[in-house]
Image 1: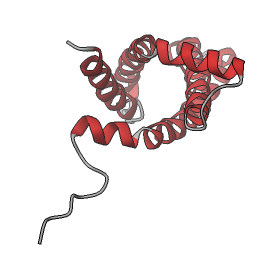
Image 2: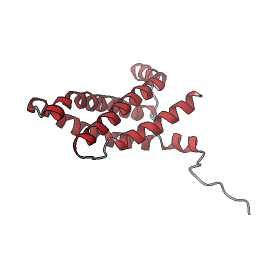
Image 3: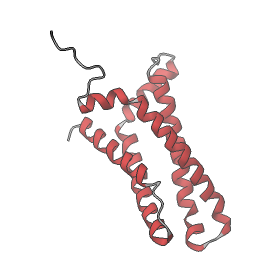
Image 4: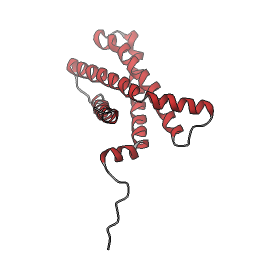
Length: 151
């Protein structure tokens, strides 16, 4: 599998699991479903970051040297916000587990942090996808402008 194919595969699955993580099921089954989907999402996010580590390192060096291009800077900022917000969402999700399992009120703040940060993270995922529409179109073989037919 090429690096490009691996990235596309991870991107497709991370999108699917991000959507599935917002599905509401009631009771213990819903909690278990959400925990499994969220854990898979977290693993895919780590793989996604690992596959894009060269870009992250390169743009970081360019920014520190004051040489980053205008297109890379907003992509980089969005990516760093995504890493931070989803890091908070994932960590608070794991920290909230005792509240769901035992009903212990002391873990309730983690549940709220998890809910809010995951919703903010979902918005930034949409921004991230929008920023990469050109790449997505090229991967799928879709031209932005249709070719003109000769008369």
